[in-house]
Length: 402
Image (cartoon, rainbow, N blue to C red; front, side, top):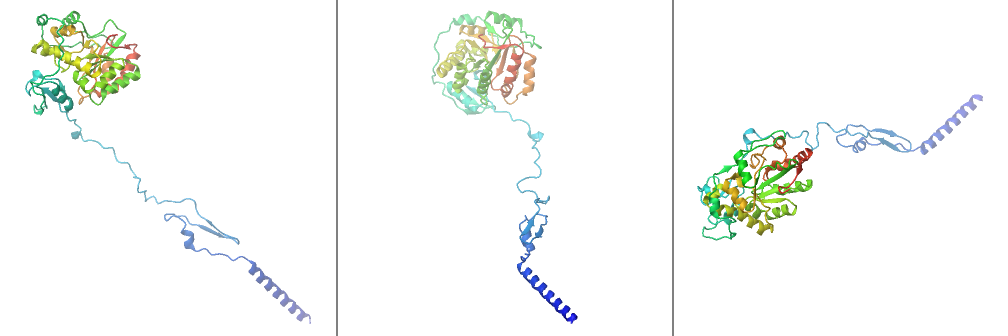
């Protein structure tokens, strides 16, 4: 009997346990299975990260590595892996080509009639058209522009000479070229005793020895190049420095606003002739030829700017004679040469800025008249440092009439 009762109790407990387990299973959340292709499709194609999956009773949590590794063998299409090497010009291609030089003459072989030499064709044409009988020739002597006929008349200044022609004819017209003996380390240069005697007899400046605390910047302007003259004026204005400019009639006609600016900003503007004729050669043709070269520039100045020249004259190429000095004085001018100059007028053969500055520094001296050409890119580059050097040595920069 006891045995029967034990069996019945066991069956009852087992039956109750199975029922409870069934109920719990009904209440338990169903576990989700996430397909592998769904888990990997959310990563960039190049990733090597493997996701880890944790399944809980309430949600599926996916943990993905935050670092995406891009294969090192694949570079962005728009970014080169290396920069191109610097381009170098072979030595055989590095030589500069000389700029074409145009000449204004009556004929290709008439050198005595030359009106300067111009790099710019436009400037040469303008000069030829302003003078009857003149034409433009290239460096090979080929006619490139025919100017006005020789019978054409042009307006000329009719003011009578201030001295009788025979008085000048008695003076020596030997063609001389100005030169000076350099001074170094602050020493003043010197000139030939004969030149010094002429400059004393016919008022002329080459050095202002009586003003040892002063240096004079002077610029010759025969034609414009790279807008350098206006760049020089900008630099002078920024430094509060006044200079002296010598301009030709051609420059005035081509750049009236620039010349007007020189005057308006307080610079001295002197006469450098109309056609850039060498004085003794012009006088050999006749007194009026030289006088008209001076007066033609005066006409250009007055008619194009409304200003008259300051009474200073720089002879083209530094050429002069006793007669030319006297005629320029009679025309109302002081002749102006220089106590420093260097080869700065060739636009295709410029001295390196550092070398140019060193040359000038080595020859600075009290009362110096520095001759610089406005066509020089080098002069534009070194001008701020040159001004600083001059002022740093205690000199004052002034106009020639100061």
